[in-house]
Length: 119
Image 1 (spheres, rainbow, N blue to C red):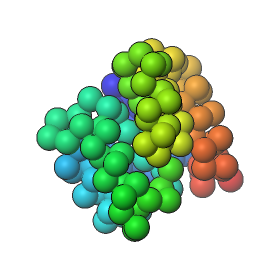
Image 2: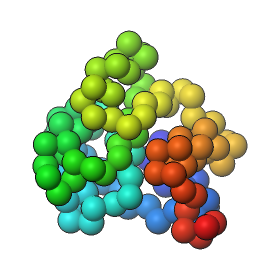
Image 3: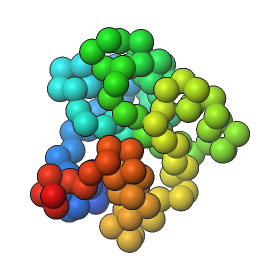
């Protein structure tokens, strides 16, 4: 799924960096301070919730918006938003066959702009 999202966002003109686990993802965000983080909740080494908490507690990354991607039920939505997520998306809601339109719409809502290539 990570590769499909990466390809869809790259096709839409976004610069995409990925990480294979929570530790690597946290390190990458701290090193690059991206415009947005797409955060899966089911990660090896550090869970998505642990990464979210660490990002929101760090002065350098607390303002980076985070869209949570999860296969878990919506009952976790309020908890994750309370933890600092900017938006919440169930993986089943993303229509990757449709150029990830649902995800891209959420990205534009959260960061307030389309990709640099489209701007």
